Image 1 (spheres, rainbow, N blue to C red):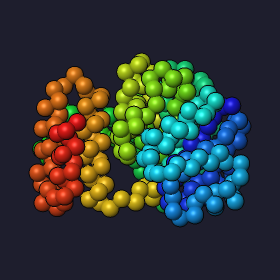
Image 2 (tube, rainbow, N blue to C red):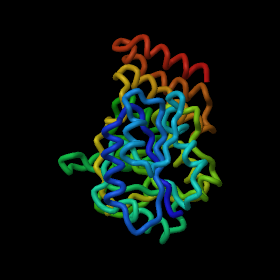
Image 3 (tube, rainbow, N blue to C red):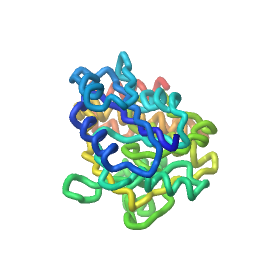
Image 4 (cartoon, rainbow, N blue to C red):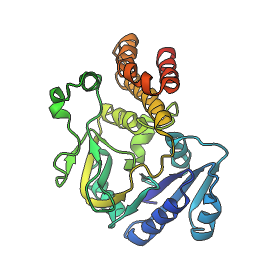
Length: 284
């Protein structure tokens, strides 16, 4: 088997059906299988997937496991050479998966790669970027973004290039590299789990690449249903966990203080969620 394509679904029935349709319509020239991991959806997703795509390997979680944990379940069942993680709020525009596969086959130094994402109007959306560092985070907290000019995202989108990370919407991973570095850290529920994994991949000596010829629609946020305050709380907690794992040589107290700084003004807008985030930061 060349590739296992993995989608994680949580109450995104129509998006998932549309995404699956695009996968089967656009993908050719490779041997692939498709997993859908359903995180206890309540919108009829499971029935609809079984009816419309009986060939899909459907895994039903009894509860919402989050992104990384759900992907891990399917990755462990995959016997393919590569796994391709695809958000349910995406549509393939061309034979993107084959394009990414061909690149990985020709570049053994690549541990992961991803493609070129667009919105419904074919305007570019976030596809790749640098890994966030404590330094860049500190300057941004102080409103000094200009001191991080070298850490701009999505530059030279028409160029095939090595990058710090591919966003998790369309991430192809070499299975042998995952066997080496491990799967997603399941302490993350959402956000930054793909950053932390790609950080580990690069620390092990492998490279991450952006492939501009693989075209994919990404309807950003379509698979995320949290309200803004709850979403910010989860992001803050995941951000801190990411820093503590990828930059474990830094004192824990310094990282806690760093991640506390932006919570000062967030407390005014969302006191309950901010206090929960701060509690997580100072207890882990």
